[in-house]
Length: 294
Image 1 (cartoon, rainbow, N blue to C red):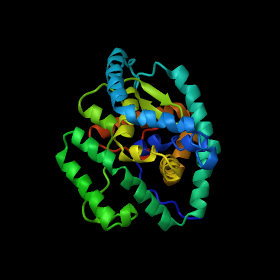
Image 2 (cartoon, one colour):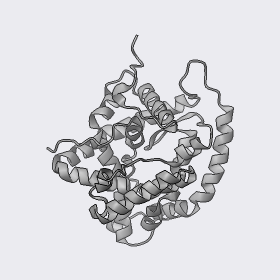
Image 3 (cartoon, rainbow, N blue to C red):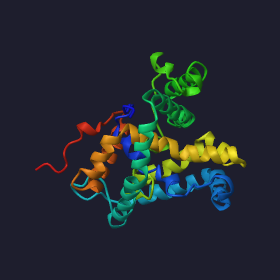
């Protein structure tokens, strides 16, 4: 069994990738050969082409809804939908237990550590266009140039992103997303939301995920026709979450299966991490306070 190479320790990385892998593994993207679902493909194409318009409408609704939600005294975040969120969380945990976790274990068992590292590098690499667009939308020209430089170096010198010489050249991976872009423009974070499959979020971050989907050039590559596009779509929605689950295996297990109330623990970890990111900070799971300590 290959030793797990943990590249990311941020709670945000853990939370964002915790349940997304079930997208394909639960059957939503079983699209190989003659079993390809034309309905799913067409729905995905429609979502891709109309994402920008829907995102702007969603932003407006989220901001209005977010302003109307008050955080109770002493609470970390408003959670008016907890009675809905908890069953969704239970479903996500079951999906992790029976699908994503075993797949990640199998991936770790059959994949040598060096290949795991290279695959992880490539997963980061293909997200750089989204990072770049958000750098621009945040008005951070310096980071945008650094992102372009990193993409160029790792594409040319790093075997298409499998290697990471850019970090050695002073251009480390510094991810961002549209949720953080909205935060940089003082958009209200809204209430806590537990999304099916995708896991923890806020109103603001839910909008951010939709917009990031539209900003990603791979969206418009993988929604095209042909078996190659189908394979690319499946890989895009399965490989990153499996890699992230494997890299953060012990941490995710600790949150989901070793805490007294995994819903409360995950909510606290996610919200604290996201708020730290909005101020340029970083949060490690190991440094989180024990919310059950007396």
